[in-house]
Amino acid sequence: MPRRLIAGLAALSLLATAAPAPANADSVSSRLPTASFPLGQSGAVTQKQKAVAAGIDLFTVVHGKPTDGYTVSLLIKGKDYGTQAEAEAAAETARGAGFEAGVQQFTRPGVADYPEGSGYTARIGLWTLKERSKAEKVVKQLKDANIKAKVDYLGDDGLQTTGPWNLRVLTVDPRAFRGSYHASIGANVAKRETPSSMAKRVGAIAAVNGGFFNIHTAKNLRGEPVGISVVDGRLLSEAVVGRSALILKGRTARITEVKSTTTATSSDGEKSTINGVNRMAGPDELVLYTEEYGAKTPADDGAEAVLDDKGQVLELRPAGGKVPRGTRVLHGTGIMADWVWSHAWEKWSLKVTTKVTDLRTGKGIPLTPETSIIGGGVGLVRNGHERITAKADGHANVNMILRRHPRTMAGVTKSGKLILATVDGRKPGVTVGASMVEAAQLMLWLGARQAINLDGGGSSAMVVKGKVVNHPSDGAERGVGDALLILP
Image 1 (tube, helix red, strand yellow):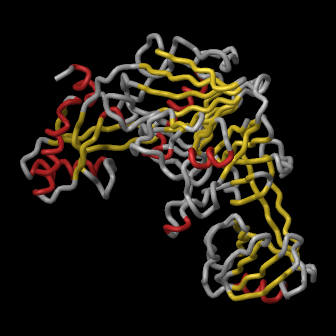
Image 2: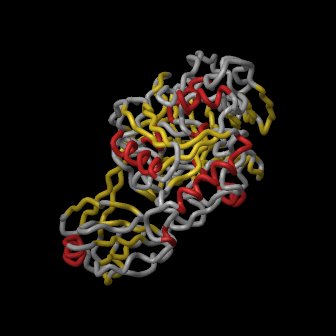
């Protein structure tokens, strides 16, 4: 058995280490660094470059070699880790069934807004990359003994690895590029769509998947962005206060944290906060549905006011109906249904005002027709330094911080160049993906002064001139909630 594989499990408590990311001379539009790759063992990077259009370059970056193999992890309350007592109990159960199980501690690194933590895994055996079938046989034997387990590839752990890594990097220099950046929700908010389909519809030069979408709502509504979405100046999904976002206008891009505020003011002067935009309503909420929603409003015993583009109430109706073209529907539940019945009489007006605020500057972001905003999954880099905001962005856990996954990242250099990168993963022996810390290190290596993580996993996709140029981990491109498009 390779020494690296044995050392990999024995050193399970060690964090992944990487060379310090060198300051890049902001030259990403013409070249990438060729040495000092920040992950794995030191050595030269294999790199190919292709000119896509004026100011746009596509790079393929490959580094590292496979030395990790497989183990079997015992499941603890459905997860592959738990407390020390839980891991010891799981291992003891497996030993009682005749299996040689051990317990290892691992360390989840601390990030900017979430402290370091520890966890424990109970595992059985070590096998090389070519011996997965042996690990699968053990999982079957454990199942026969009523013990839940799974095969784990050690390269996914987020600890020390030699890779390999396979990246696609798209760089856009606004000094030479003459097009513009846009966000797209595809056909509508409710429906998921592939980035290549969104790109084809408008003739985009390139595209990447956008932010996370809601997989915990009704199946026909799962295109709904989780967090802010602004398309051509229209707020289509409200912000989660303080989470990271990518602001696009013309051929400029910047990263900050945002909040959004939407209010309704009736003809009688009564004012109320609108809690959400284009999503399912909770108890005692006002939710605004725009014509981009693409589905009927929920029939939840609430009340609705159908508004024209000037805010005049065209119809006051029970909840559950279409959003006619050129209208918006204000939907109230519980006590807010009473508010709608009382303050949205037909032929009255409801003035709906929306404001998006940059929390770094405290200033409003003008929602012009040229403005788009995509919500990021996690902040990675701020002012040229690693700053991972896992807790603020809703991803403070072992799976998202420590484990390696396919990732899509966006960054901006000091001079305003846009960097879009995908790192493929979940392909043992081919490419291992990246942890959050590794994602930040990669973006620093590429020269980003500001950077965020977008949606990842099977959603990670980069499209250039109609072709998916990375290798999505699902085996095919996945439908997503929104995408970033680069238009000519």
